[in-house]
Image (cartoon, rainbow, N blue to C red; front, side, top):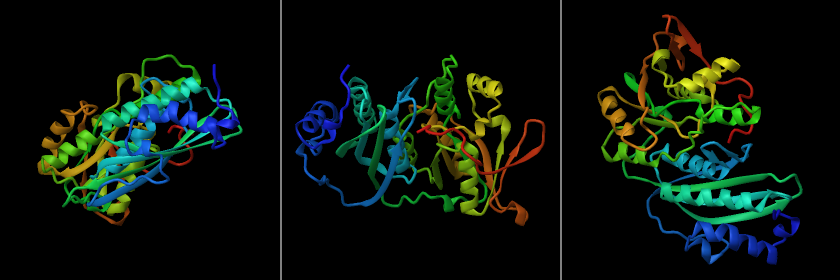
Length: 333
């Protein structure tokens, strides 16, 4: 099989061939095909910008790969501010010896996911370094925020309802299964969430907060939001959506699904009177069929509850949850 060699990063003929045959042929963007030093794109609204780097191992896993993952992660970061994702740039760092056919598959997956998410890949860069065949991708994304949309952590209010868009822990369990050689049918949840966010806004749901549930898991995300708002977040253990397979996987390895990473789930915090409608909208979207209400936001009863995250357990207890300590699972995205 053909492999990446140092010449592919020289900026010469081999570099041009790699760009044309692998990247340009798949991304099919009129802006990218101009091959200028910077992309010039239209836009006259408030913009949201994000950047991210992807170093997941293995590069391909059940339900996804680093190519799909990098588009989903970038799109979802923009969506969490209510933006409509439009443009993405991507920088590839290729280690000498990486397989060109695998690279071709990953780029094809990126292109397909970008099309699904409605974004254009408009600029990119490729560097080749010494190494053992690894592939790393850095992205930047730009989206446009509709007029009147203001979604951020500090907007959470007393009596809001906490919604999660689906089962948690799938991506973490998938990646760990692959590394440990555990056979199961768990698949990564990596998915772009622009449809459900767009429909919430289009249906005039007054969304106060959105946050995608990635590294650190659901508990880390909710604790960060509680701290940002200075309110008390309370969730019900019995309402947490976790698939039977992931529950069994957690039981086998002693893992807590509250702290397992995801790549296609989000938390939405909305006023109580809109919660049922919001869940119905999310369930009607691709990737949102298991959405549910898991808790509520309240005013702290005392100083100890300011910025707190409390879970009511199935046996009637109260568990104070904190941000993940240490490394849950390295190179998960």
